[in-house]
Amino acid sequence: MKPRLTELPYVCDSTDRFAVFAERPWCVFLDSGGPATEYGRYDILAADPYLTLTAWGDITIIQSRDGKEYSSRDPFTLLKRCLGEVRKDGTGLPFSGGAIGYFAYDLARRIENLPKEAIQDINMPDMAIGLYDWAVVVDHREKRAWLVGQGRDERTLDDWDQLEQLMQSPVSSAQRKPFCVLSAVSSNMDRDIYAQAFRRIKHYIHDGDCYQVNLAQRFSVKVQGDLWDAYVQLRALNPAPFSAFFQLPEGTVLSSSPERFLRLLNGWVETKPVKGTRPRSVYKHRDRSLAEELLKSSKDRAENVMIVDLVRNDLGKTCRPGTVEVPKLFALESFATVHHLVSTITGELAPGQHAFDLLRGCFPGGSITGAPKVRAMQIIEELEPHRRSVYCGAIGYIGFNGDMDTNIAIRTLVYNEGHMYCWAGGGIVADSSLEGEYQETFDKAAALLKLFEKKEAQRVGG
Image (cartoon, rainbow, N blue to C red):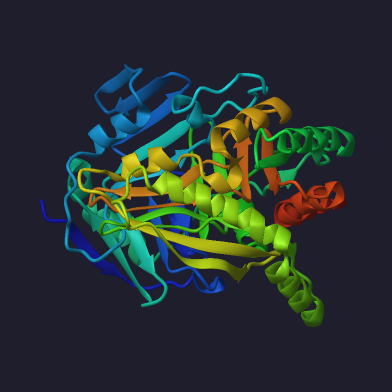
């Protein structure tokens, strides 16, 4: 079936358009940050999936209008089956229907044999994916927008005129309760606990057990009110090219990630691991000095190379032999609160391989585990008090056309049962310093914590 395509008026701020259906079931906003970011281009907005898949431990629930199906099969295999045969549609858009959602870090337990030591206290699925038959796609470079639908769900074409009218002049009439914070921010690792974990990792490295381990601490607060309001505030504090807002029955994900995990476009793969961080400064001279310090840091460059080697090996599982290359190494990319060292790795997907095969072969991303990957994940499970949930997983889309784009879910908030959680971590290597790595977690979490502080001040003030 040929996709239906209607051009819409371009609106530079897609939050205005998304607010219209921010209360709809499984609404999702893949947010490039638009004109606010140097690297952003496409926004994707969707809601009302005709099929959902949620993984809970060893069981995946497939929910349709006809009922539920429970399966113990590999969730990536199930997704491939549900997405159906890959078909190019000729729209020229990056997405015109398909799968959107998240793959939590803990989904890795379906791929690797990991211990069960950390506490699981966030009641969210290990995977939450909807199959969306329609979407709004906004191209900020060309300043154009479209409503696109595939017609795989009969409701799409039946409701097309209504959707088109809704999107032509988006005005949200929803009455929302302001987002506010009800408690002080707490961490699951004070400095002493972090220091103990840091020293344990150093011991493993010196014994030759591993080369690098990503260690993260988790912050949490009690909150209430409108989570869409919280996302709009976060977006202003920390615009990022791989951001997302995703609302589920169990909770909500608010991401302002700067890191691409995997993009697959017409058979070509790109991944951009981030390793190496310095905080931004409001003073231009100091900001430039911090950026130059990062570029010259032998420690950060070595850390980056370790992950590049790991990711090259991961891509080699599904890419054609001889096509995996590193066109950019140690490029500086600057965001609202931090400078990062970012490398780019590319390859060509091998014949017979699917986007979900690529994703499974690389999951979770090496930049947020360490090297070697499985041993690093075992150490993370031993030393971090709580499971990571969505943090360090991936959020994004896999289209009916076979293309994919996903982020690494860092700078990400998870709301569940009255609490909001966020994490920040960094890769520890042989020459890491305790004070430097501990401070880096706060540098990375700065924008997220600023959201909590701002809302806390409003609550206390009246």
